Image 1 (cartoon, rainbow, N blue to C red):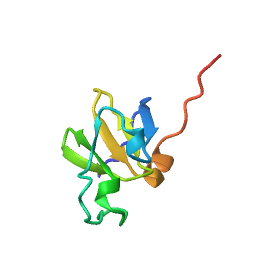
Image 2: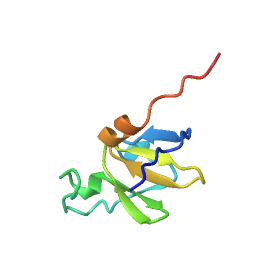
Image 3: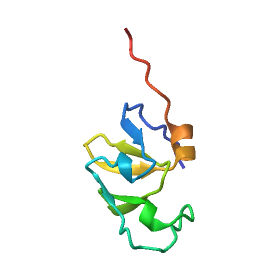
Length: 92
């Protein structure tokens, strides 16, 4: 099996914590939903959802929302984000 390295691509991302941090592409989960999230165990009514190229995904408090290379959005768990990305330092 051959091995491959991910090409270095600069992305935009923001961390999402609560419904007040709601960018236009994050929609509110039903405020009446008392079910628990399968990812973090919190109430779904405290979560958001984002439409990705693969369909709708849950956004848990603390998740990063990444804007991909063609403008798509998708959530990323904080531990995966930390292992995969590093801040870009702009030259001044």
